[in-house]
Image (cartoon, rainbow, N blue to C red; front, side):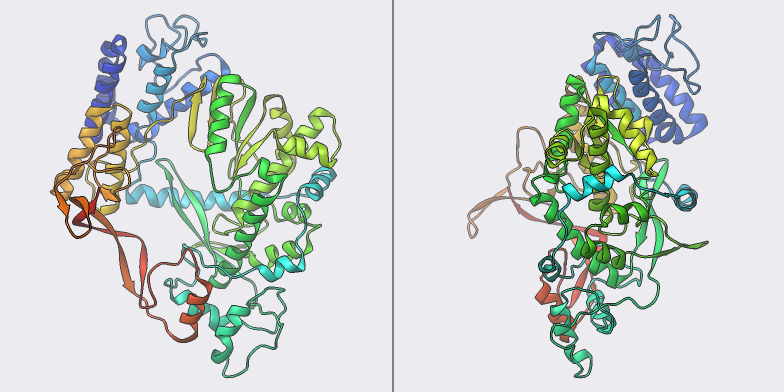
Length: 593
């Protein structure tokens, strides 16, 4: 079994880095082999990650918690026998309490062993079961949404922090394309044909669709919209389709596939809201939606100072009530009208259709920036209440400077943690306590894990090495191979290298970081050189390159003009063909180094 061999190679690498734990870890491998024999790969993808969760919750509780999956104790009795060599460097073997000088390196290796296979994509039979569970949970959360009132302080803070949209802002909105699928199942270029054919000017939308009107001119058989008129495409209730995508080895994430015309409107609003956040002297202190690094840096610093707590929300977008969004943006009538108009009011799946009480699913392009704003404002309210301040502009600005928000990852002052939990629950939201940290020296935010100022984020294997069957899977394995090598796990890295080369039937070359090819990287930026190109005056190497698969997707006339005029940054392909999203092919060719 290749997964088991990969874990064995990883343990050998760890034994080289922590030789005092070598004998214990090799005994642990016998336990792993025995459990995998009887439990299958679920021991690696489910049981070990749950064990890792228990270890790091024990840090937060300052004492190792009982573990049903590993009931056999070590000789001193307080810790499980499994991985006790590493655990004894973190917890007291007699009492189970966290050591004052807990080994950061041991915690890093514990996290790597336990979470190596946490995000492996699942096989079809498991996917179907988890898909049903994800959809059922989506509707269960929807049924629980019942927000009767919004606290007046939140409304006051929103009026201070968010400047209303003006008529000039409305005129600046331009429809934008998005990268994802749409409800109608259209190809990328077909979206523009659909947009032009389905717009109508008999319902006022207060939207600047001048470019669309230009493209619609001939399509409407000479009946061009009147100068200055607005257009809309709302023809009855809008419906989104509910699907799910892999999240990790134990769950899937629900996505709403939005109608094509609404998608264009949502992307326009998304661009506007993000721009307003980045230019706002207040909100930009706490929110940076195009960069996770400020949140990661703050989490790492907080793991040392313990000045700030990190919070993670459970089903954040699914619990965000429409009533809450309406209350927060009630003073901004233009934006609120557009948000309401652009959202799907219904969602449908294979077994159920329902009107939404939540604001929107994750498929709506405005969901992420809107929830980031609302969670930021709730954090401000918690700080103001804790400090006994009113919602003056000065106090709100001061509070915004103490927090950091990226989606549902929140970082707030440590003493405000419980107050914020109260505010979130008061407005129908739920904190994931298993991924929120305030008491220990461990912090987790935006995919970055840290303990006492040192980053201990593990490397995840996202594709099973057992039998890769597509270019996407092999490219993922090569990326993981390089990550393991850069962290000093050389045996594990070579293991994945051999798996990838067996599939490709070619040896991987050593490439530079910016080469764009599929190959090996090292920490020194070394490269394989095979020839000098006299025409282009550069050194080159013959290596594998990724190419996107394309499909015939021809448009002409005014839909083609519309695509050209809007110059979408997210558009790909030409007017004759379009890129098949998620489909790749691999070819060999000469690359610059």
